[in-house]
Each structure stands twice: as structure tokens, then as C-alpha cells.
Picture 1: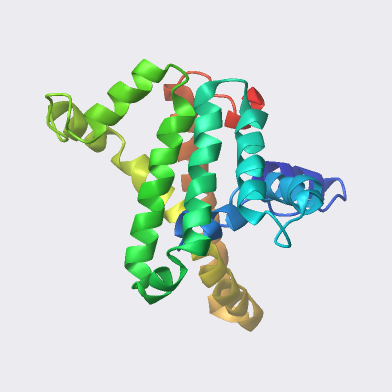
Picture 2: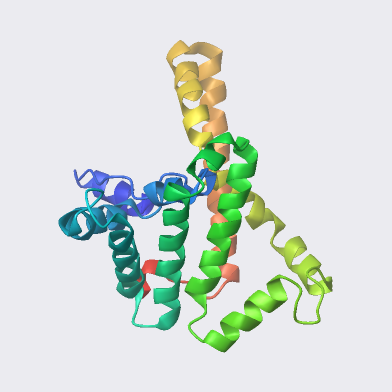
Length: 227
């Protein structure tokens, strides 16, 4: 989405942000305000509100919307299950656990949200129900294998750099750095030269790292090309 926004701006089009650091969310409700914003807005405006929205039959409306959200991704039971999974969580957050969530420390809220989201991605990925069950059995240590083994440690070691880059890219670090960087540029002088040198080095290192990853991996098209 960032690439589409940047390419569009080169031609004079200004597209809205479609993802707003969703992995920093403090609840599933917050997550779906940040993840695939255009899709969420579409279902809100053209399905949820016409059904009655918050005015009447709110719980059935939410379940219908999330069932259709799953169906939008594909005519497979795992997508329906994925949609209803998030629909049920959103209903529980809104009508059962709202006060409890407000009292929870922010760190706990983020960890619980990320855990629930990752379970959701498991539902999303496996179209074969037997493979889905095997995945969750292994993930929670019920398949006779330890949760962490030599293969797990090897994967963590091999992909540590990408993992760190993913964590950094998932947090709004840019929003904190860019204003300070722009203030450095405005002051000029030696600070301007330092800032420009830093920007050149950063862009060069990022280009090299991206090139290495692209060369070492096979073709991996954008996830939403599938839908």
C-alpha cells in the first residue's frame, strides 16, 4: 500500500493510508480501525449501516458483516471461520469486556491483541481444516512436540535480521524521527551536512538489504493479489 501511495503521488494522485501501524493496536476493535482501512470502511458504509448499524440488531449485523468479510477473501470455510472469529471477539469486546479492557495496562492489551491476531492469521492461512488443526496442536504443544525445538531456534537465528526489521517497521518510529530530522535540516550548517550524510547512508543500506532479500528468495507476490 505504501508503494501504491508513493507511485500515485508521483503522478499527482493522493491515496489514503490503508494501514496505520495495526500491530501497535490495543484491542481487536483498534486493530480493525488500522488494518485494511479501505475494506473495513466499505463494509461499514455499504453493509453494516444499511442493515441498521448500531441502531437495531447490532450483534446480528456485526456477525453478518464479518461473515461477508471472510467470504470476500474466498469461498473456503477457513475464511468464513476467520471472519466469524473476529466478529465474535469484537462483540465480546464491545458488550462484555469493555470495562475490563479499559482497566488493563497498555502493554498487556497490546500483547493480548497481538496473540489474538496471530491466531486469526492461522485461521486465515490454512484452507485445509486438518492442517489447521495440526497447526494449532503444534503451536500450543499438543502434538507431542515441544513448542521450541532446534528447528525453531535455527529459524529464529536465520531470520533474526528480518524479524528486527519487521518489528521496527511495525511501530510508528518514523513519526517520531521525521519531525526531528526536518528540524535538523531547517537549522542548516554542519547539522545539514550530517543529516544528509545520514540519509544517504540509511537509503544505501536499506537498498542493499532489500536487494539481498529479493535475490535470496523466490518470487513472493503481494498477499492481496490472491483476492
